[in-house]
Image (tube, rainbow, N blue to C red; front, side):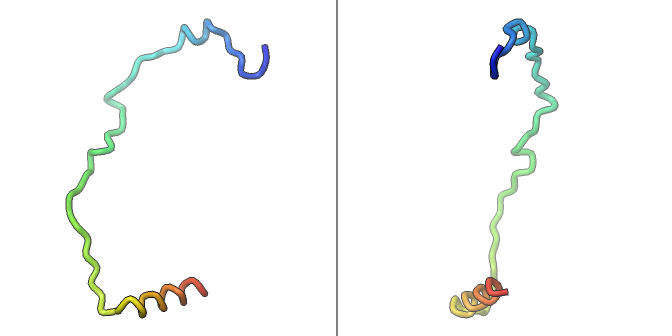
Length: 56
């Protein structure tokens, strides 16, 4: 057998039972809402602050 070969009998005997109760529910903790950021800084001040953080 070469690389990637498989025994077909192994494929036929695989357990295909799916435990749906154990599955992850990705929508279990969905939240609706909004986020607001209040700042007195103008865009130039924020860009300067970002640049100084990048320099560090």
